[in-house]
Structure formats: C-alpha cells, structure tokens
Amino acid sequence: MATLEVQGVGKSFGGYTALEDIGLSLDAGSIMGVIGPNGAGKSTLINIISGFLKPDTGTVKINGKDITGKAPYRVFKSGIARTFQDSQVFGYMTGLENVMVSAPWGIGVQEYNVLARPFAVAREEKQKREEAMAHLAQVNITDKARSMAQALSYGQQKLLEFARMLNSRANVFLLDEPMAGIHPDLVDGLKALIVAMAKEHNKAVILVEHNLKVVMEMSDYVTVIRNSVLLSGTPDAVSKDERLAGAFLGVTDATA
Image 1: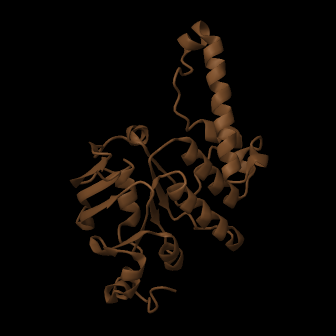
Image 2: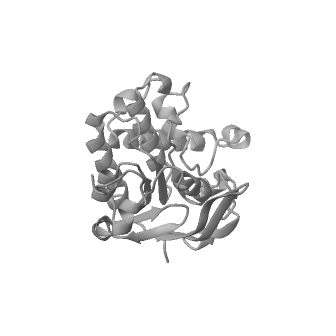
Image 3: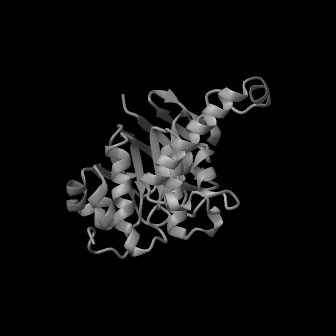
C-alpha cells in the first residue's frame, strides 16, 4: 500500500481546467519531484492534497485512508505536513515555540488536565521542548531557539518550517518551492536536509520546484504535469524523454 495515493483528481476554476485526471502514488522513504511550467497546476495539486482546496473529482488517500476534501487541520492530523511558497512562521513566537506548536500532544494542555494533572502536563511539556530543540539542531538553528521568528532571515525561517514539519511526526511532506528565495550558499544544505527527511526519517516527500537540475538530482521519481500528467518515471528516463522540453515554453535544455 502506497503511503500517499492520488487518483483521478480534477479541479476547475470557472471555465478553466487547472487539473484533469491526476494520479500519482508514493511510498515512504521516497522523493517525487513534480515539475511543469507556470500555471500547470502544481500548487493546486499541493493545495488539494493538503486540504486547502477540494477537488471536483478524484480521491486522496494516506496509508489507505481517504482524506479527500478534509479540512487542512484534519489532513495534518492524518499525517500530512507542508510548506508554502512564502515563509509561514509565527512572527511573534520564538523559534522554539514555532516548532513546539506542531507537536502531537498526549495528555494535552486542556484546562482540566492543567489543574488536575499538573505534574504530568509539566513532564509532557518538558519532553516536547526537548524534542523541538532536537529538531532545531537537525536544521542547525538551535541558536535561534529564543529569537523571535520575525527577526530571522528568510532562509532561517525556511529552516524553521522544516524543523516544524519534522516535529509534527507527519508521514508525508509536501514542499512547495522550498528553494524559492533561498541564498545560493544555503541550497546544498537544504537539498541534503530534504534527502535526509526521506531517507533517514522515512518520509514520503513531494517536491514541487522550478529548478529542474535540483529536482533531477534529488528525486527518486519525477512527474511532469501540465494540467494533466504528461509523463512520469525515474529522473534519468524523464530527462531523456522528448516530451519534457515540450512541456516548458522557452526551455531547450531540460536538464539545465
């Protein structure tokens, strides 16, 4: 059973068909790069999988469970976490607090538990704090744990989002243009982090990215869409397919 399975997904806006009969599946420990020209429906697909848009047709399943059309918070609880093209951190919270909010709580901090079981709640909070710090360490920004998120650089905010995803214990990570706006000096480190998410943490990762070279280097599978799936396969097979160049206006070297 695939960790993530999308079948027959379609979405229209008025008379415009953004997606038509999209299908893909991905197992844990794998990275799927999703590429296509501007307006091809890549972000629409991510929004449908994560619950921010409801598809007109088709289904989205995680570990066999149908989550089609569920609210974003329910999709998140089912095990899907995502990033956005623009940084989405809580500016007036510290780096540590930004990561801790993604943690699944056992006892919880409801009023009853805080009053009736204060020591248990305190123990759980201590554990969550330690876990959050460990994930900040994984993205090399432990020194920003007490800094307000709004004071971090754009690249640091992106790393904070990755720490938050790792802390969520989600099984599927959806990355929407993670390299956008990143300083070139940080790209290699971010690439290594994404690969580690899949290979070391056994996550299923969907990578939507304009940089074809990055996608081909990192992905186990590549899917090319232009409102529908044009081709799908290994990076080597896709890069050699004549249809790849035809999917991009103005692109002559598909692997550049």
